Length: 207
Image 1 (cartoon, rainbow, N blue to C red):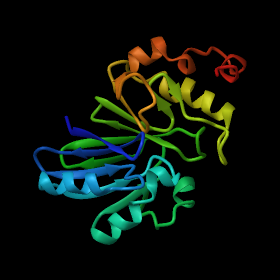
Image 2: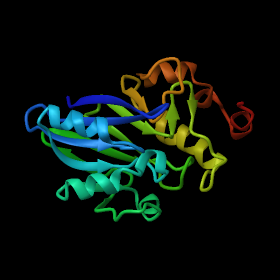
Image 3: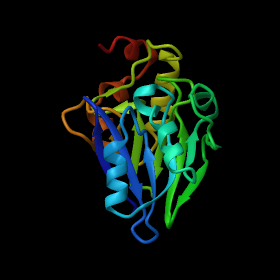
Image 4: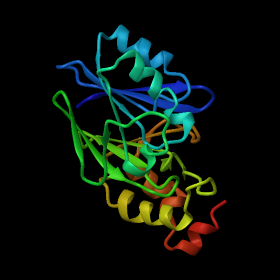
């Protein structure tokens, strides 16, 4: 399996480095407002940065994409089509449901998960980990009251895209909002009220 390094950015954002041990190919997921620690990690491990992946367009996750691309021109910026159009840098590859990228010997599979933004994406890494951006947090889900957010769409995403995924996946969220920085999806299915809601009415009443 790929190695996943969780990096705190600012007050409570999480950025991630995914890398293949054999090839040393790597990806930054959600570089955020300050990619300095992520870039230092890549340098310290002698990694080759292949992808800059943005789970959604909000600047607290995506702003440093432009600086990294300028610093490492060979890196490839990845986002969904609709969210990529809202970023301040050109996206090189757009992804949607079922798309896959290779990172050396490792697999990155993409799921389109609208709700927090119209083009939010989650990433399954080698059928072992799930990077959820602002779609799913530990104990909660992403807010839907910002521009582009949609409560009904978030409920559909959680019910139809997240709930069917295997329980063994380790959830790595985009913010440190829960009582732990990561968790199994199975445990979240049992304890996270946003995943336990049976209908849209119940979902809409979750504080």
